[in-house]
Image (cartoon, rainbow, N blue to C red):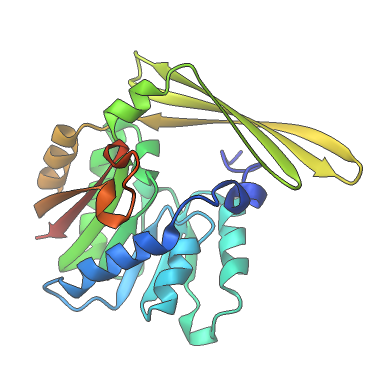
Length: 247
């Protein structure tokens, strides 16, 4: 079962505080500075397609890839109102099994998507990205920092919308060097409520390990940016943004 099977219909309403437009603006600035013209962009781990749509509206030809059929269904619906020529192509694939029809000019992976990849599988993700990003193309992604993930141990978080109530418990697993998110969703169904549960795991990736894996896969010109570079002044050190160029 997809880890977003229950969460997908409510994901957008439970992430209202995320400034997706700031991410899209930041990517656009980096694309403009790229040494190769950026027209075709891969959104890896695209989720419900919010950033995919924002970039499509900015004139980029988009490919959205995600492992969750439920999240992709939401993404397709979200982009259905775009003109036919602007609608992204969506593919259901795991990052470790990325397989495109050709190369793209740039790739992005937003909102800690790469934290879902176990450390032992990160090299394969970067290897496949190197295959499908054109020479000189840029790859931009962000990860939750080790400080954030390790500091979430014992956390309890509550969020709600009109038809859903979400309780999230977080536990740091020292053996796996990962944060486990236990989600309980109470979803309105007519006059009743039903309870659904999911478990998500985000793995710690150190900057040293990311740099080494990128270099080994054939990426260079690796640069880092803090969360404050795209408007997150509060807790900006909890997320690091990284760009790398495909050699």
